[in-house]
Image (tube, rainbow, N blue to C red):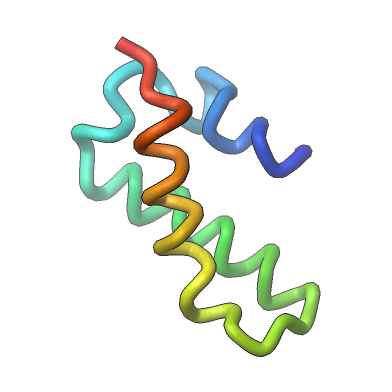
Length: 61
């Protein structure tokens, strides 16, 4: 799955995903796992940053 598809796909981020904390947590965990595999030093910070970006750009109503 491409990076943006995690938040643009209705399967992984259905409409209203941003209102459901458990779903957001799951999405952050998926981001964390992918970032960790890349071996980036700041892998702990990135999922939160991605979540903040996604809330601004990928909300579906």
